[in-house]
Amino acid sequence: MIKKLGYRNPNRYPGRISGAFIAAAFATALLTAGASDAAQKKYVIDPAHLSIGFLVDHAGYGKVLGMFRKAKGEVTFDEETKTLSAATVVIDTESVFSNHEKRDEHLRSPDFLNAGEFPDMTFTLTGSSATGDTTGTVEGELELLGRKHPVTLDVTLNKAAEYPFGGGLFGAKPYALGISARGSFKRSTFGMTYGVEQGWVGDEIELIIEFEAVREE
Image (tube, rainbow, N blue to C red; front, side, top):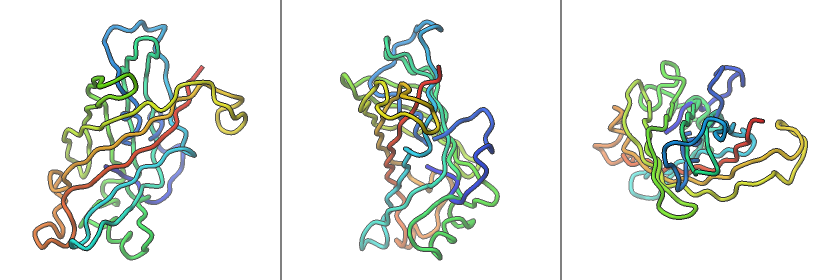
């Protein structure tokens, strides 16, 4: 669930602003069709408040916690009807980080993310449903290593309100959303099989996504 692992020009993804996986997560318990175009608003993920983490088993001894340091995304959301009509998150696979330089180099290699050939990992929303007042599930399509497969995220809308802090990337006190999302997938589904048969590296990838997104006015 994730792509960039290194660092790239922030203008590299024109028209696809930020986040992983994430933006999609944003859907939270919502989504009934039929919101008016006037009520639908675009929210851009704030890269300074975006975290995309993952956990994977290491030979049965414990789990390695890693993250992607670069991602971009945006979502279209109607707060009145709780409708999420679109979401895209683009993750820079080269930006992967697990606090171990040699391991990170291996993760960027063809054994895992193959960042040289596949610099992006993309999540696109396909549907969602509510499970509570502020919780829901988001269905989406994850593209990784040139393959596309469905991934489901459990999401929570933490807060939607005027931002208490001014300045920075989005100006003085914009309207913002805070989202938490969790999910998992099997990397072998995308053809990433290194170490699975031997039990060296787990197949299941647990996802941890946290982000704030700011409404475009």
